[in-house]
Image (cartoon, rainbow, N blue to C red):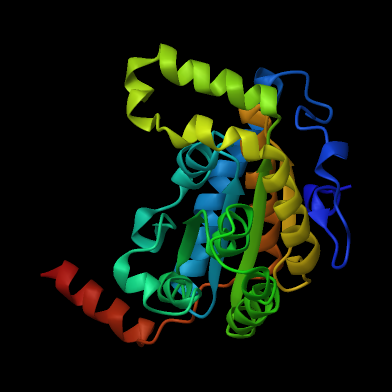
Length: 276
């Protein structure tokens, strides 16, 4: 079974995150055993992104969601860092700015969506508006509960315009999160990542899990599927995300475009110049 099939949330499927092992690592005993496959996937990602950029007709949107320390930045650095930055960018979805808050909740997501030929990674995403807003009751239930269908409509619009949408929930355990918080405290180079929210949000763990489960159930579609990625092992997380992105891009059957110049004439001009 391919990673796309194994980790995909099928449309209408109700996922219980407590039943998904965040430490799962398939047949790989350790990072070393997966190193060659990780390197191969990086090369394929680079080649496929080059095709996507050159073709210039379609695009790729990757949404990354996770609890704090779940590994969104790690995926961007270790997996998607293989791509050429000329055709790839990251959009961060932090607390809405005054301008963003003055518009509908999808306005900033639509502004950040990929152009043709482009790869865009949402570090957090429009799903924050059915996660944080729900858990902390920032808007009434009638407001956030109506957003699932609006999200589906938004993603359908992008898909029909030629955007491949892949959404990843990076699934870690509560104990693993605590270990990663400790690692930040012990590493001076990671102190800048520490915030009060790291610990004030932990009491809401169960509420966030329920919010994610409903988002996965309501918003995993054939045109914009969700994948639940076991993420306690960072190397397995990176391996799995990369394989799914590679499979998705390969299924697009990308091609380099035909040249829009007369190659025979260009060759004649080259040979004439070289003969002088």
